[in-house]
Length: 449
Image 1 (cartoon, rainbow, N blue to C red):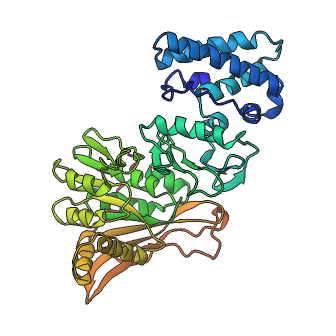
Image 2: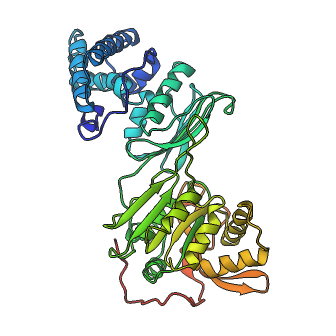
Image 3: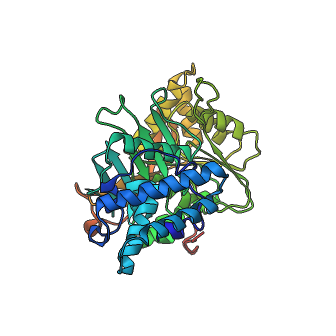
């Protein structure tokens, strides 16, 4: 989809055209899908961008223009500027037009990557290196920014659209783009080799249990089991490393929640896509320039208890909010869901214990383990293969506390080789252990929603 068509349905980033930074000629050329399809020389592209930017700045000084008005004015100005050049090939004209609009209204050399459906993540390591993840594999692109200042200008444009800030006083930020993509930025001196930008792209595709089964990420039996577990209000933790698909799995599990229930979600940056009629989405907030006004995940989890939720869904547990989540699970909010980073189910339990201790509470370890054993019912472990494939590697039930140890039972397992890939991925099969918490019906079909 061209940038012009995309802006027919989306608002422009705030103050998109007010930057005085010079355009990136390298980036303008590479913003098109094929470098050979750009019709003008780099100097000519620079002239067009400078001319249109000057006209837009003059127009916005004279009157307040909304996003739609600004977009249409930009398109008219670009069309007029390109009309001075003899570009006979329509495809070359459209590619050149989109390249100029990307610089003026979009996110420069990153815009075309954001538009490509096959690109799942974008990583910028300083102004001269841009990597992408495509089909589960990392690769370096030929795109660059002209300078660090040009990269900073694009970063400011991205962060401003989410109402957050990043500068020397606050050199790290988690934010989201207007389309829902997750954005992380780290500036120097914390990032030694220049500004670091990581974008995990938002996908509008709502995957279901059936989709995961078709892809081999889940077996039909396991999909039915998890559907029953959610319906029967079991507390589930989705565990896995970075990029293993924890948020996707959380979305799939949440799709089995009854539509009559009230759900409160708590996230650092909103990513969950729950199609529920009675849902409240809460998002944390960083401190302002004076260091005040921060609202943490723990604050939101505590407040969610006062909002009469049937279920609480925490996007990711990574700190002291672990105790509040466990207490919520133990005090009438059965069926709550969350994710955390861990390599296996046993590590997930240890991480929960550690996060509670890091919260500064003066509780003996046994009391914490009792909370974990009584609150958590199931742990769904996700793994990423050597070829980028993401799949469920095990489903484990928390049985209870035996002595001072949290006892578990593995219900489903995948016998993984040392290098698991799509071609040789073994199936997820039942271990033969019967769940003590979930009553399953083998005749129940896999639900898509």
